[in-house]
Image 1 (cartoon, rainbow, N blue to C red):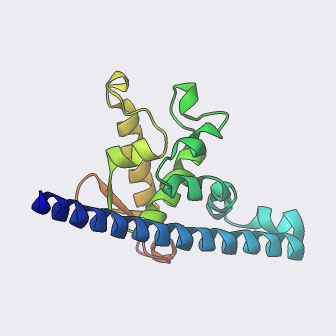
Image 2: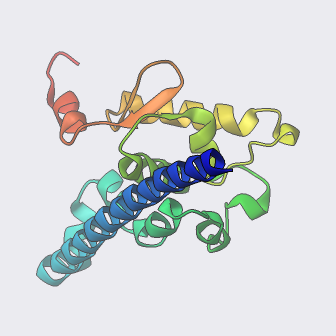
Image 3: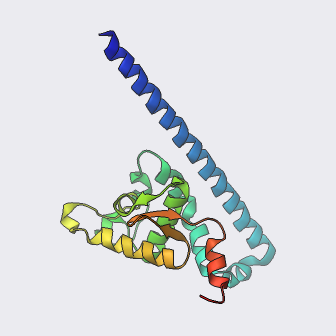
Length: 179
């Protein structure tokens, strides 16, 4: 009986370590979210809505709605984040809208800190990956990730594995005169 308890103790220690790592990632993500919120408030106070509207539309879209999904998306149960999305979410049965899906994919990959498979990403952002969807939602997610890769926001490698691009990688790509 003792070896069994020793194995249980070891497994508990491993799981506790994983939980500590996840809690640390959530804390980092929440801190980043707080900084983004402060930045938004500062921009609005300096230039009002006109200043924000003149900025890059992709930066605006990713910063605004990320306040809700990030902490819930990184938690052990992503369902509450999906339940708060009234239109275009999983409850509608259809695919997520491009802006919603893009935001969720970027937030997920930024918080993960590692490469993720397309199917895992699709499931985590709330797309239907069940057998009834016949892989269509996974393929939709794959094409959206490829689009983000083309824009320099994410990186693919190996095939069907995506990770967030390093900071500034997208900007360097856009400024490259050869591109």
